[in-house]
Amino acid sequence: MVLVSGSGTNLQALLDAASDDAYGATVVAVGADRDDIEGLARAERAGVPTFVERVGDHLDRDKWDERLAERIAGHRPDLVVSAGFMKILGPRVLAAFPVVNTHPALLPAFPGAHAVRDALAYGVRVTGCTVHLVDAGVDTGPVIAQEAVPVLEGDDEKSLHERIKTVERGLLVEMVGRMAREGWTTTGRTVRLGTTSGRTTK
Image (cartoon, rainbow, N blue to C red):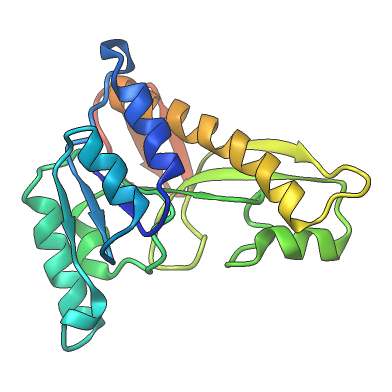
């Protein structure tokens, strides 16, 4: 299951990977928080079921979270991927499903919505991307994998972010596939892949 809010480039990468049976994962549905976005169109072209659950259609965020959890559960996913989903997931969704997200920095450095800008402003020479499990905080969940991206002379926010996004897509596809094929466990803040016994947190 993939959640999107925009163009869905990470979703497309997952759809492309899932078209190969050897990948070991299938996108069972795509959910969004708004209508008329390219991410939904990508899913529809691929024949994947979609739904939209807007925050504004509910009395408050808690009711939205409750309904979103119900909509996701209807597709019985083993894993939820937040692929450019621009809403903070609430406790009902996070309690019911393991959620994977990406971030354009090497967490815990530069969390939040302006990670690339913040990294440039700080003057780092190396940044990168992180694939992590989502928890109740903002970019605070256990790290699954990271990959470094050098900051080049003359980089601005746009050029650096484009290079990070290319690496980010590949890392997300790789990690989701491995989690589906091999399983994983989480012990404290340590995520271990290749543990087919299941997805346990101790």
